[in-house]
Length: 160
Image (tube, rainbow, N blue to C red):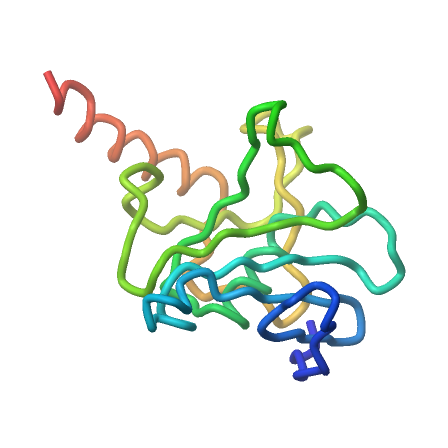
């Protein structure tokens, strides 16, 4: 994915920053400006493809979050109550926590699996990384399952 460049923000949407690259536009709002936190507080990333088509690729959203908010910041998509639902366009939103905060849920350790086919009979399948983008710590599916079994055994009954 190409680097993002800062663009002029749209005065109608009251975004704090707008970033674009060859494929995506991301409008950013800093949600805690009144507290003086700015980029350090909650951030709202509003992501859309420049061609206005549907995008639904977790890896792309993770990369956008990393590029514009930081690799060690956590974000979440909200699936709201129907009474708060806004569904007006092919635009996606990630709400990024303040710097240093972590959600009290989610995985404790990093694990990335190299591409494999569901036809292998293990897991539900995973597409391969793009050329030159496979992380050094990515493991094959068999190694991942072994690691997952060890982690699961360590946590089973922990809260009892």
